[in-house]
Image (cartoon, rainbow, N blue to C red; front, side, top):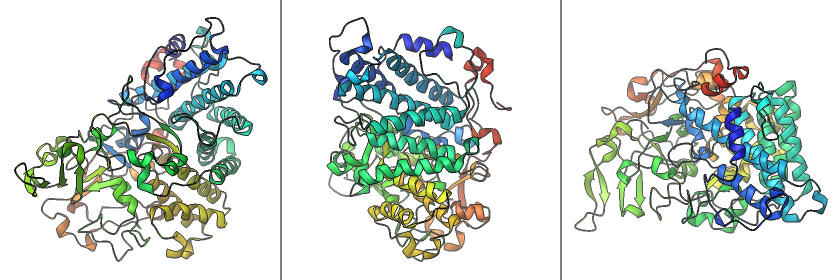
Length: 590
């Protein structure tokens, strides 16, 4: 691994990976060959090279940030029992693990080269120069956060790696966290970065505070060094800075469409995103293609699981097992509006402008209702690829669910999307603030206001109006903030970290994943007596985890060999790097 990093450092700036914006598309400026990064033009180009590496393709032109949820039980991939989330695929030989590891080390290698090569007399440097150098530090910290979040203790370098460092062991994750949090805090305190970046796709001051809060929420939840409460305090303080300076966009759905992302209020909420523009290398992504129905022309290989679908409350603010307006025959009706923005299922209509048709999603029949008829503007029964090609579709592998987030805008080709992939946004910090304060058992009105601000924007009632007994109760407040993180931030790359922070691996992987009713019953045959229970154990209830054991014969199931082992708390370092450096060492069992 060190040899890979060292080679990457020598090649920094030569590769072109990821998203593009105006500043990523520009040609090189003139600069002196000596002291490359000491000039403003040279530093700017070096930092641009880091930005290009950040949204590396985790799988078939899909950035890692849009893939991470399917590595948790809240998401699914098309292959059964062998995916990372199902346990069977979480090995030191797993290609996704290897790609994730290598992709982040390329970012770190480029950043280290730029940072070490930059000038040190910053008091005499221009504002632009200091901004770009700050951005390099933030992007390096972002890459390290993702590695610490998944692998725990890892090697830690703040300068280009030399050959004598090839066999360095792992560094304690607390040491890494403290170093980077202090560094990020210094950048935030300097106020060199604006709250809203002058160019889309650059990190903002809000992104710095958001990243601090992510690091500290992670460290607090895992109680790094026995200092969990201290980290929660820092997470809350950093998140509060964003809350005080960045407003939520008016409409939740606008965040995930091209027209919506052009709106000023949406741009302000987005703290950092991967920006794509056609006409440059790697200028589009295929996120929507991999998430969309086969009848719409997609590949349909990544899906939300029922663990996510069941988290969405009904429009009255009650869970599906509690609400009188929940209809098991039509599970998507009367739900939290974010359900439709996030998930599609059997019976929902897709409006596919770019392929010129509408159709009704169908899990069961070889034909589905489609519009328009090739001969007239009427609905007709046409071939349903989601069933006819069910080996990899939402009707089989996805057992009834499709992602809809980022998929509602059909104004561009399904396999050449330029919609921004959101990495950080203000709503996350509202919920981080609330969770950190809840974990400190510092329950006050600011906690309730933060949660309700996110809910109101989505069109949901205040949680404490629906169930006032939650206020002042730490366990019940954990339930509401965890639920909000799952439904507000689904498919935004946070579920992978969250379920590990909350220690839910065993209960989320205790059995198969269940989905649509079997063909003999269908949704039409369901009654409320056929629904799973959430109260099997207090852990099921407080984490909104459905238990299907009493009604399992009525639902389609997959990942029958799903399992969890304690070693899965952290991912294994890829075997190729262990072979190069045995001092890295993986947990027993890998």
